[in-house]
Image (cartoon, rainbow, N blue to C red; front, side, top):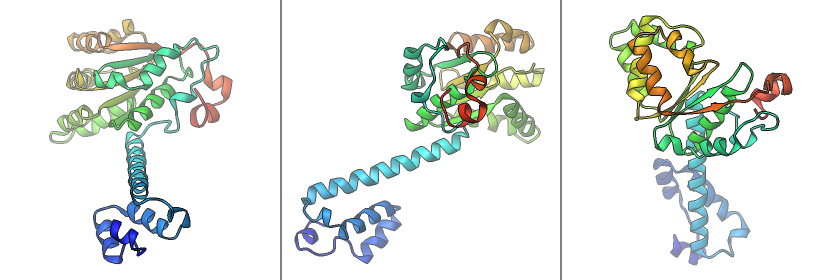
Length: 263
């Protein structure tokens, strides 16, 4: 490449283009061809030009990977951003929330519990952190609890389906469970949730969004030994975060607050 550059010839021929595309580097082809037709690059030293190519391709690859991770996470609010959180009159701990946004808790396999009433912005906050995790290269998945239990019901009827679902959930770096314990669970569902929580215990991080205090979890989980084990594993390995006293739906309106604007 350097010899071609110094000789004033094309930096890349058709055969090289074919090879780069075969190597799944169409971004490199794009920027090299753009450089050939842009006089702004003619005064650039060869090393600077190649560095620009490398930076351009790297950034495009990173952006593409983040988009794929966000899409795979199936976040309820994929546009949520940690820097767009509304703090005024909510009593939110900004320092703690920004600290959670660094995703250091994922490296330590710690959990987060967002607690608050309906409309307080629990889900939006969880999705904002989930998106930050995607930006940091972590595998994330969002579930509403009713959806998760429905998937369990479908998989449980299949051979090894339950085990496969537990293994799938275990492999996410961050699992978000929204509407945690929004309805009481039967014995079979409690057993399934115990497997999920146990498989992820100190192996991954989970964010729980709930209206209920931990003192209410035991009853909603049936009050048996597995209910106690689930509660114990979550409570003693989680940071609890109150989502505030302000109703974000009422203040900003559903379409703005939860799809576009801050929560």
